[in-house]
Length: 255
Image 1 (cartoon, rainbow, N blue to C red):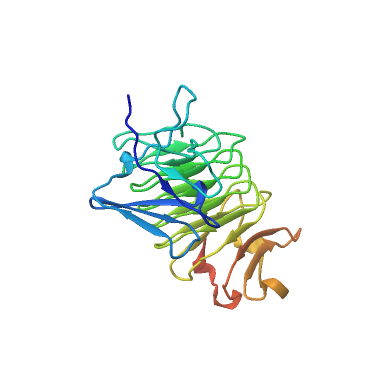
Image 2: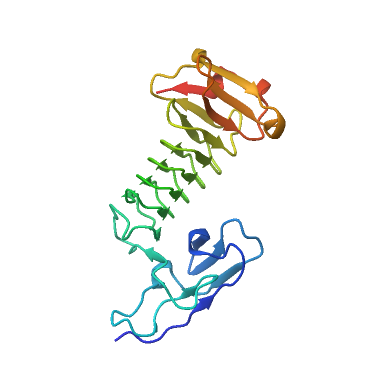
């Protein structure tokens, strides 16, 4: 029998499971929410694996689980956490939030599922497959593969490789020297933090620099660089906050 444990209840805009950030620093665990300022809880002498977020198998009123998110009246199976020594090949369930560990994980989500996968530590390879996925690499040199769907990829700390796949994807490299993959016939990538001389745009599927137009945007995109196909006008990538005239051939490579 599992004893009743304490529950944290978060109320407010954005305080939902998909925005949950769990950061282990020594013996303490920090709880915060992506995109939400001034909301942070530090649990002293508490590890990531101490969390449970489950319902009673009997279906009776919930007596275990640690977090109620905004709008919830009872604990739901909102997020799941891998064991510290578990090399997880696939997350536990569809349409849930998964937290991995400090191993070098190679982990997939599910097709037709909006997965949230948090790599935490280690040099992870995270693959969303089908669905509108959110992949966070965390600390380490991570490879993030969105697959099909409109995905959000966040590299975190380290030198990361971000490939949104097919769809209207948003890529955020974070700290480090990051690589953003761009290909044709796969939708538009919005790259939020490309840094000249530090990051690279990587062309795949036969793309070459001479096939492309690189122009300064207009209107709402006046501060952005637009990368498109010269022969069709297809928009392949938007580099937000980047001036087109600072880019040179050194900012691009091909695989």
